[in-house]
Image (cartoon, rainbow, N blue to C red; front, side):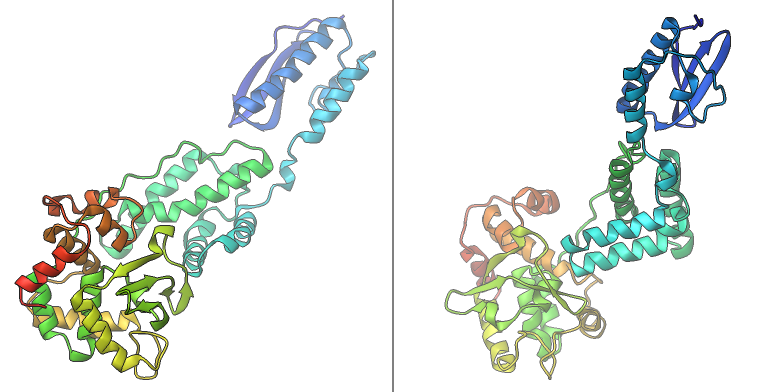
Length: 402
């Protein structure tokens, strides 16, 4: 009967290794399994069987390790044990069949396209082609380690900062790393290895400062903006619509009788898409200035689909408008530069200053709760009492804008 010492389970290069003695010879066999609780239980069961078979004198080395360095051959291997080993081997992942990162990344991409908006799909494709595939493309997915992921994330900031000569935001780095997380999570499930991205939290994001225009600055801006775009900016400043929402606004979503602008579609990079979130589907109340602006615009573009469009009915190109209209108007009005998105923040802060209800404001902006309202605009929140939008119109009337 063979002699054995108690078998032990070790880890080498992230893989589980069985270490035991048989007939005075130390036997070490490296498995293809990563060190996870599930894999440990599987291998511990095998090691218990090995120990039992050695004690009973029925251990056949090649039945456990057909390619093992030590191939002892004894008789009387228990048929049940042989069947168990065959079943176990049948379920072990064949790592020679695991794809390289580039191959699996594009497979993951094609499988998820159906649930993405066109703009998001383009962003993911750009991240894969520009960042992830050049870095990990030639590695098999199970070979990508946690340290490699963390090291690459750290390098993103250094590389982009060196290229742009500017500070890199954690938000941008998280944006690049999110597809990698999705790819590795799916690969780990399919090919049964420990997900190296597990428990790597995203970088903390500092909430950026907002710079809304004051009501006096809005008045100056509207005084200096070219007349064809006056009503466009009235709507932007006093509805809080996102750029993609006002770009995609069509007359069929404007209800003059109910004084509502219905957000049902957006326009991103020239393509019609759904709104950003479920809460973004909403009906925006038209205050008196907005109602009048929309009525004037109706006389200009009622023969076209889009509310704000060029002379042939095509939707406005917001990048061109920002360059030709927004920035020059700020300069003429002697207003420090702001991003065009600040028009949305302006609407929110003016509503707050007027004393509108936080719940009403959140609905107008397309937020599902008031949480974001208080997080982003906390220093603009006074004592709030009204709920119907009339307080805002009272503020405009006091300033002579109605």
